[in-house]
Image (cartoon, one colour):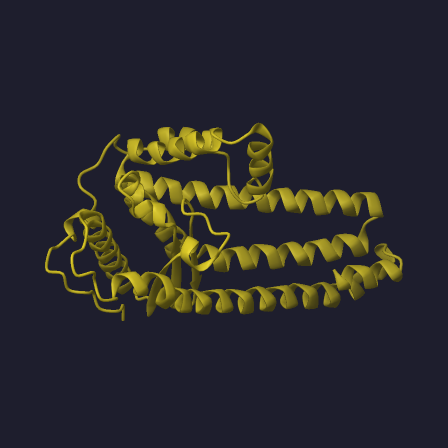
Length: 285
């Protein structure tokens, strides 16, 4: 943005020639460095969040007379951690931390999930609702989708795509008349949204291949039903806010139905790890 303002003051146009290129490269690198630094900070924050949310429940002293709901919740958390750490070891991740998004952020949503990947470290945010009795059947789909983002290195790809967009935006501001520069900026933004949608659909396809088509469609059908409980104004605001990074639920259900995979699959590996030894899993190495 600073580079664009500088170029504007110098009066953009083709007369700038290659003089605009160094400024565009500097702006692009500055954005990439900023994004990488922010990503490292978020992954580090996830490590702290794990101790204050996930570990506080999983590794604290259990109640003297735990309820069946508590025992089931802790067992599902233990199985989830074992499975994610097994995937981390398989793909040579040094660390994969887990935290409850609604336990760390006061505005967090228990129905959300997100993932971050920086180098050999990764973090997964999970909503607590996925471990409740009503929604735990959807947990494998949520895990496989987020693992898709981690294994595809979508955070790093996003940084590269955004930095390239900054480079082209600055060059457009330098070399094109203002109306054409604005159109170029809008086109680049739409291309980035399209890339974000494709990333989400690619992770959905991974979940379909592992969990089955019906399981993935059920997750997005659940989200559609939950959203339908809100007033129309809230639904519209949610749709506009999420459209910049995520495709609508209807498109995701259609995509899942078109993905070449069985309608249903066998038991997810998460289920086979639900041991009853009561031992806390070790940290991923």
